[in-house]
Length: 72
Picture: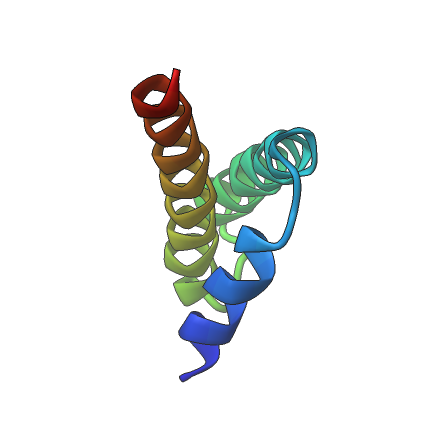
């Protein structure tokens, strides 16, 4: 249920906000992967969660781009 709320929150954002969100999450994902590689990351499930957030935001951006292409 928490995931659905997150998607709803993301859908309320503008494309620019979503792109900023994706950029921030990709940086966080890099940091988490580096920590995992060096053995400093205790909760490896965080990597999966961040990957899902990135995918969710990118999907919303793609849906909007396709919707605009159909409308034009």
